[in-house]
Image (cartoon, rainbow, N blue to C red; front, top):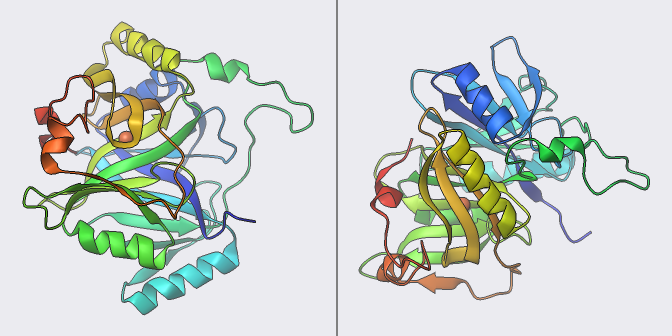
Length: 311
Ligand SMILES: [Fe+2]
């Protein structure tokens, strides 16, 4: 098997200011499937085409933002090995017992220098995508509810010391650098896009003084028509749009950034290219992010909110 180690981003726990408002947004407007609620009052959702029990966990809190992002790894042996590798690298790890998140096995949690909690886990209950495994139909009724993305695709996180974050993901967890934006003086990176797969990003970071911040959680659509339909659905439901529909120069993704009712930014997007680990990373200058169209290729400007609004 070619894809081993860390497989994909599997779950994210998001803080919302009002739980039922958040559930309405992610279930009824974005169109995820609610799969459970736990004793702590957290609500679990998945995108229609995801096969594991949950990918988004909503927790009511008095400030918005992200609690943690979890990556699914191949198996328990991989989980043990990667925990050992993280410790050998000098990071403290914590084991969270199976079942603390619904339908999810034991998790290994560690904190990045950027202030974000990242988890690895090997097991989450497979509940399927509503289609048979034998001779399936191409889609199901759940794929017509709301915006209806197929999966939680990636997140963009803001925090300090992304140079060290890159080392942890690339040297310990087997990710590779796909694209980057240089600092204004060209001496380092102000933004990095990292992949553990054939996707143009599985996680991304922007250098930012405040630790632990969320820029956006991103959900994948399958066509540009679906992105435009998402824009219509956002307008019909008074969802506040930040940028788009447009195309990023970085990753070539065709995107909308918008805010959930708590002020967490989310993205619905399609496209991008398929990188391999042997590709030379694509580099953008700091000016290239704005005037070069890295953020918004048609408008070629650095929208002020991109660098300033995070939760
Ligand atoms: Fe994104």
